[in-house]
Image (tube, rainbow, N blue to C red; front, top):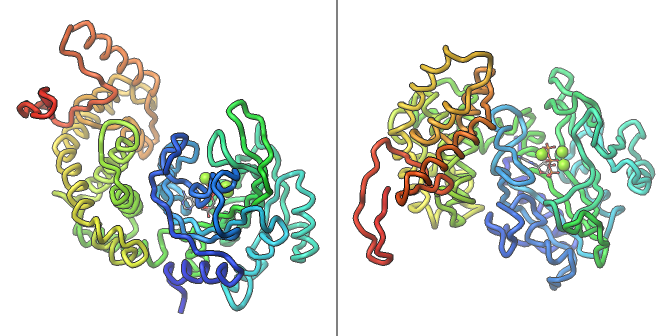
Length: 471
Ligand code: ATP
Ligand code: MG
Ligand code: MG
Ligand code: MG
């Protein structure tokens, strides 16, 4: 009997409570008082000011399971969804934190105990590898001497600039703020899966999957890039619940864990198909989580900022549903299956259910009207392509007339081995703005306005502002 994701979440929080940590609830996906951040992207976000010494708490050790969205900003995984085994737009980050209390030695010991102790996860140690920051001999010593890990399993990762690999063992939540060197733990899913060890050019495969990042918070990065020491060295760790669940449930991809299987099977029933293996189902399941949680936390689809990111995710989901053969509104029906598996841990889904369903349904119905036409236009253009690039004019027409965010067009293009001329798209947009300005007083701001229907409708006057509203 393998543990469910819910069991693992609870085991993690109990483990750290047993080590003197206070259990702190997840904060909202909309960062409080942090204009530098689009969405909450890590467990440490809600403790940012505590690390900086500006927001003292009545505890020095904390543990949480944090809702995270990585779909824009410094950490953006939107384009990975549907392509890797391990990335979501929404995921839960399990974390333990020390605010000037314990540091490297204990952080490493706690993580290892939770993963390998027979009382906890009991993962065979020959499946695990760790990375450290290239010059962090102290961390190397703890892994080798205190934990007893063979030196061949401890990989030094340097400054990745110019290197043949992308990983980076200096973690930062954004361009400014708390940061520091880190040590990461990887799980080997087996030789039959493509991918190499971290620090090799093949590392981005999905064989060795990063499960846990332990950051040794030491600095506050300033706007000019300089590193200012924090008042006290601290610890911030993050482990993806879906990734550790995949390990514990003996499956490779996060999408094969209990929680996602329920969402994927539900999507099949709603759409009326049988083949559970289609990649678009993963996208629909992933996007149902991020969109529902974002709306639950107060984001609404719009044409700018956070609302536009949400709109882009919904439209991608609707397009993947269309690809799966969905007719009519299907996406909002994913809210119930999501509540089945996550409502107990996140009661806001239940409390805000009507709002979530209504917002998804409205957005979906609105977009469905132009999606088909836009797809037809794109199909008609494809045979005329010279090379493998969809030109900016076409991408702009899809955006302007049919409401296709440019990343959605790029997503379709990628499935066919094509790309979109982003620069051409930008200049077509600028050209349109210029023409609109010249056309006189009836200007349209294409930054904040997207037609979603080929016919605009005048919807009377807004009594409060006295201005006309075009929808
Ligand atoms: P990767 O290299 O796989 O993209 P990362 O280094 O960007 O991961 P961190 O910023 O170190 O991830 O976040 C801490 C942990 O959160 C990761 O070790 C992983 O378990 C989890 N995690 C990060 N991004 C995602 C994601 N998009 N979906 C699911 N889990 C994630
Ligand atoms: Mg990443
Ligand atoms: Mg990484
Ligand atoms: Mg990492």
